[in-house]
Image (cartoon, rainbow, N blue to C red; front, top):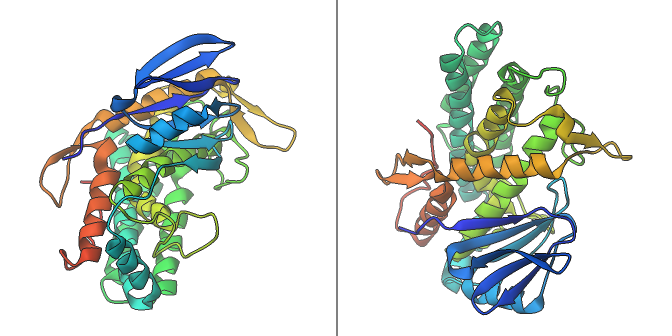
Length: 343
């Protein structure tokens, strides 16, 4: 099993990353702030005005350490990676399956079933942890409605129908998402999902976490030789990592939504840590961003029983495990793609 390595998050404006032998150096105003050996890293994520030296990019490319660049509020800008690894035959099969409408629909159906199940588990955990919540009945009703949807996905269905079920599940889930926010309701609330740009603190928090998750899933897919751009639920679009977005659907509720809710409900982040720009976008300050990253890393270090492989796995390795299972399915080693369902 792959070892869970660290991700280096750089959030300081004006930071400069460079190479010194086998070590990543982080400098601010010509002063060295951090030294990290390359062998303990799986990725480097840069937010805001952060730059990297060409020698460091070359070292990361050689060692398979993905570098991604994001705006200060988490919008993906670009990534740097080394030579594509993996068997070319695997990618050819991935592309062939993507050209087959029914196969694409079947893979998408598995992903959507997992997303629905994991979204429902988030609601059920909220009911278990806060049974006396004044909105418990509404949350329970949403959980019941989500439980019915997988039954309508048991048979082979066209991709558009699968997408319709996914959209219905998202509407049900997010219709009660505001009820899961139990503290700081003046600053943190959820009316609807706003993405580009996020218009309120809760959406800014979710968008930021989704951007980090996208980095992890993309890195996992590339590590097993799959093309993150060619997906099944999310079809080809220039600049969009379709397959990474597919696998993300399984993990959004447990690796992003739960972290965001915990940060707000435990008051680890505050409303004053968010400011609105002239364009209306809501962004986090450095202190808040670091708090979110620490919480996300702690979540990744937790262990969970994987329902398919029957082993305990660090949450941070779940994207890698699912990428491996997707590769095994595409190679013909598995009869179907087994998505991750949180129990």
